[in-house]
Amino acid sequence: MSRPESIENRWDILYRDYPEVYEAFSNTPYHPTVYEQLPGIVDLRGKCIADVGAGTGSSSLALAQYARRVIGIEREAAMLRQAQQKEQGTGDRRIAFLSGDAIALPLADNSVDLITGITLALYPPQQYRAFIREGRRVARGSVVYLGISPGWYGGDLHDIIQGVEKVDDEVDRIFIEEFQFACQDIFSNQEYGTVEHIVNTYGFIFGKKAIEHLKRQGKTTIRWKFRVYWSRPT
Ligand SMILES: C[S@@+](CC[C@H](N)C(=O)[O-])C[C@H]1O[C@@H](n2cnc3c(N)ncnc32)[C@H](O)[C@@H]1O
Image 1 (cartoon, protein in one colour):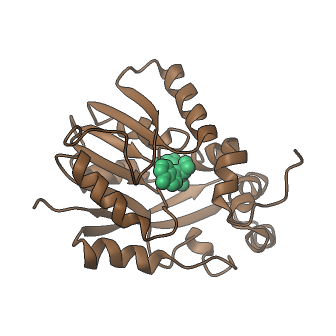
Image 2 (image 1 turned 135 degrees about the vertical axis):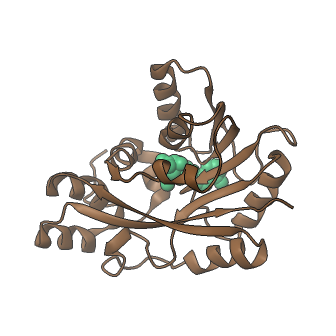
């Protein structure tokens, strides 16, 4: 299959056909990482966590630095394969990956301490309601979602990227107004090192307008604003 210049924000195509590009994108260093900041917001220590939308496994492996056990749940077979290979490479038996859907989790009631969705990015956004309900069924403690802050899709190039349906205000409304989650914003800079690397990963995902801008400016860093949402004890 010949590789296009960009998949123009078609994340479904990315996950299905280019999991190695997602892996290269997500493994490009962030400073400070969300995993350095998240434990200051939500207590992860010693917890059994179901990490929903585990992707190629990066979030689950990072959470395992703090947790007692992490079960990564992923729907897309190509992403799940990469996560499972990575887990076998670490030999860490506290981490396991399962095939499953965020809106019908393959886990028993009250079987984990926490549910996380790290940039799970459900679409359409109405699905967050089912994710929250499933999370509450399965977790004894909080449901935690880390998404991109409203208006920050694509990080600091959000105004350059075009043709993307804006769903972040609706996601924000569901978590905060409908389900009364708490929230806190965190910032992170992602350093790609070279224009070639940022174009081949970030640019490949976020589109030709972003690629043109990156090349014109010689830009190699993206600033992100993430929003952490967590359910309060009832
Ligand atoms: C942006 S990636 C995040 C991956 C990982 N959490 C990380 O931080 O690198 C989102 C992942 O969620 C998965 N996903 C999307 N909808 C899902 C659903 N309904 N159930 C399970 N996984 C889903 C996608 O296949 C993709 O692998």
